[in-house]
Length: 196
Image 1 (cartoon, rainbow, N blue to C red):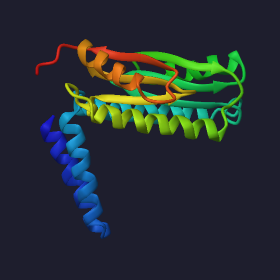
Image 2 (tube, one colour):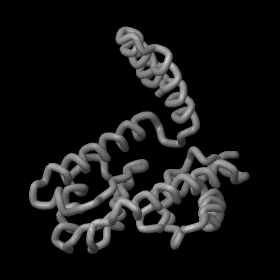
Image 3 (cartoon, rainbow, N blue to C red):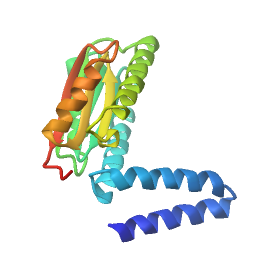
């Protein structure tokens, strides 16, 4: 794992240095290295999650029968996929799920899309603000590492994902519950024993 990670960092630095943008790349590479160093997923799982999201989005947003009528966000964490947003019909909702099911390395799908008109920009902006506040709260919460949590907000419902202990999951959910504007917390954690 560390050999692959080192190769990725060296490749990134080499590519950016050749293009004349070394300073920003070193900062970005350092940030990526820092994030990966504390992530409980292995490097391959992180790469797989990124590929899963790209492939599902490509599948649903190149499908001419649905792409103009839906608003669906795709999140993947350790092979668990969260689909959130709105589709105007149940048939479109089912089609989105089928696209996700056909992507390799998907372990499970949490289909949290709702049959409803597509949300407006104002609603999405409020969701983004709630996500920002939730991440900030997690950053300041004792006895957890905020880097272990993925936060997604849709229609003021906050979805929490991560590879955490039950205690960490409870602490995080209780902290985010205090954020103004949060209607509900949905815990989609993969629980594991964590050495402290």
